[in-house]
Amino acid sequence: MTIFEALRKDHDLQRDLMERLVNTHGDSEERDTLYQQVKHELQHHAIAEERAFYIPLMELDLTQEKARHSVAEHHEIDELLEQLDSTDYSASSWLTYAKQLQHLVTHHLDEEEQEVFQLAGRGLKAPQKTSLAGEYEEEMQRLREA
Image (cartoon, rainbow, N blue to C red; front, side, top):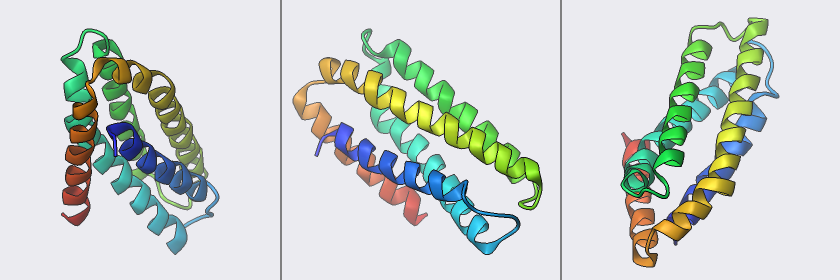
């Protein structure tokens, strides 16, 4: 497995969770459960992705700018999560923030897959693509178990 395949697998999970989340209603157990899943998945993914993918990309001239941009988007996602954390599930603004989060996450994932992956594919050597996947998977497992 390459780093691109490992990341895409988790991206698909994030898209699915976000779609399910924005279709929840009010202060429900379903909304709470899905939101907690989304929040942990996004946070764990950002940490693991930055360590196993973006740090190596920042060392390459070809990918440095895109890597920095993507890390900045992780911070924007964190800020929206904080906004959701401080908003009651039953507030109408909660769903508005959740939809903003979905839009931002979807934009980030699409940009990553369509732009960053192409540049990284040219900049990283084949063995590195495989070793980074292993590093990413190990970090995700560690974070999910913590």
